[in-house]
Length: 410
Image (cartoon, rainbow, N blue to C red):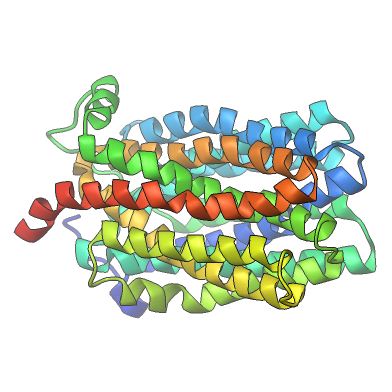
């Protein structure tokens, strides 16, 4: 990092902002499909909630491979961050072709397998680029900025997707538009993002690097609880829309408004939340997130069982879960970068991303199964999720004890 960097707002390297802009465009496309795919494939194509949950979860199977390749490629001088990102965008665009054509379970699985591969390649590389372009003091805000771009794009996509469904009722068009967004993102990376990989004398062979990372006790403890965080996020994207449609009775237009609210509120609060938690250790910031998840899930499941207006309950629940996500995402990425040797950033962030693969492998089928069991299990599912934060808080407390000496030295 010897060359001086051009900086823009917040003192961040201008490439962070360009990457954020590209991610915003890509996430607009993701917003077209993220919340509407379960509704479409269950209520129009005619698949069961369990089948759709399994198909969505299958993306995590290929995602494991993608994250392995993405982390290895990002730390490989012959491949690097940029080529990995370009490959991710291309594979994701191809996946949308399959999803747009899907009219049965097999094709839906194929599309999700390809999408999982693309996403797996994408996350280690993009997070490593942000880490390369920032320092420890500004890293939390840099991760918050790119997550903010993700949220704004996702919210815009959700609102536009709802408008498309309400006006022309063409769900397949959403997948086409998502594919186009990945093509645009490919162009942004190709033109505006430079390779940020730098060789380091202490770099090990790739095989040894993975083994060394997996021997890091702090990383393994973090990964155990991070899988639960990602399982929670999977419930918002795959289970909550179908739950609110089929068990609470909201129309697609109301669903669109609710999840637009969730994402817009998350966007507004992202930077303030990241800054307000900067004075805490990373594990403590994640504990705050866990408490918010517990409250949000309790409101989600409890609303339908009480006299509270269901629309108000859904609005409050999704607002609290937005804050929970805001508290989680920058702190989690920054913690992994803090733990990683510079020469192994891609691999550490790939292992961090593997938690998302596992969480999304478990989350959608688990949520789909709960919804297929009937109202009692569907409502109780959210309350069980709220209780699950307790062991996670204990794990994070032990992680804080392990990381505190290194953080105080710095």
